[in-house]
Length: 78
Image 1: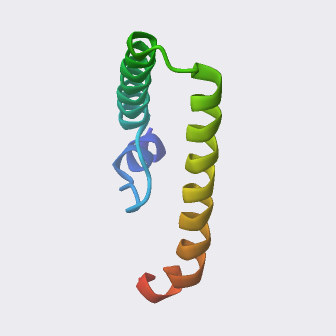
Image 2: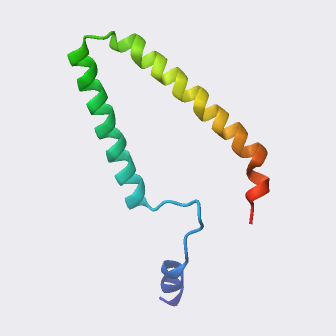
């Protein structure tokens, strides 16, 4: 029992998110995607090409962020 209480008291590190926070972020992202989808329907745009362009740009920006984070991450380590 004591080990369980000690485990529950363990603090999260700076970069960790709880399950509740992850679910909240997932719902917010899904609502945003729904709004974009509805907007695309009203604007009569080509959804396939738009989705491919958005996906490609998102991938490139995320890749740049990961590479930059690896290169300069050592500067801000504790």
